[in-house]
Length: 204
Image (cartoon, rainbow, N blue to C red):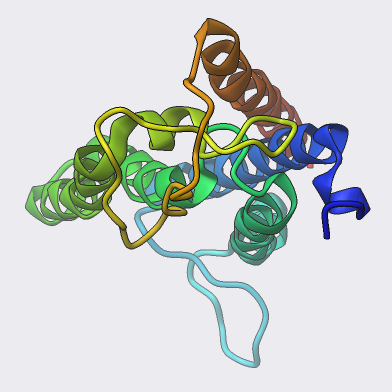
């Protein structure tokens, strides 16, 4: 496996960049779908043999299902292509999804919307807190360098539910360059994904 294309540094970096771009693109579209539906009163429908009281806009019909599958694919790419390089999308995806989707419900007003808002926020933050308690550096910079060398975390590592456990044979002490690469690649790619999502949703 060491000689395969999956082990190349450029593959890990591209895997991290593409997966974060894909996930934030998918989430950005889903977020705007949620805002649009809540603005319509919290419900809309499209198609079918029955008379529809509130018709869903075309961009909602288009992006509601595709954004969900796109986000799942992005997490898979992060796990199997970046292979431990960079901020671990598997640890962040759940929190981004539920905490992010809690915000539109806050705009909706009313007791039920606020209840859902708080519920979603708790559902998103609780697993992230557990991830950070298990090993915060791993969540932010990953478990390996772009070259595949395993990090040696000073405070050890506890296995968590959503992210990769740090390799037991880690020898590389994370430095500033590792932090900048591990955080920077996902951050820049993620910001680009959000930008494209906003432009695409408005143009659809």
